[in-house]
Image (cartoon, rainbow, N blue to C red):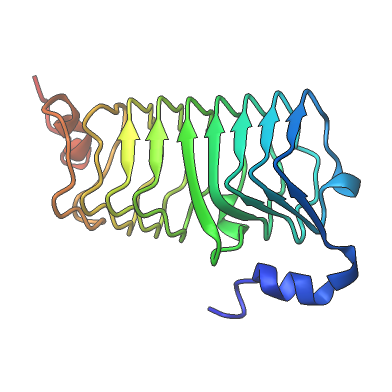
Length: 206
């Protein structure tokens, strides 16, 4: 496990002279690149209408940061640390979250596009997804205990060997989940959503 996770502490040890700290700053309509984001700690910063898709996130952390209408499409977010990061109306199409710093990972999504995103093996306990489009995303082996999917489109998203205990799918739709392949104790579903649990049986639900 230790070999798989490159922690922020280790990155800071490698690059102690290149570290920057930015506190309580607002960025608007800015295009970021690797030169102005690598080896930087952002704390209590707000990003609005920014493009962060072309950045190298090596040694970068975001603590208590707020992202609004930002573009991360196909961003390589390897080893970034998201600590209490909130994303609203952001685009994460085809982003692999599985390589983030797993020791520092606390996020929530509101109105975001997460199509083809990868969350496999991540600790996502109590993570909030609200009004998101999550098409063909990968949640294999993820811990989603008590996570909330509120009014989310989960068409073709993959849940396999995932811990969905206490997870709330009540208002979400278009999901297909095999109860035999996931932990689902006390997971919540609406009556209309029950058909998404029966797809493997090829039943007709009216």
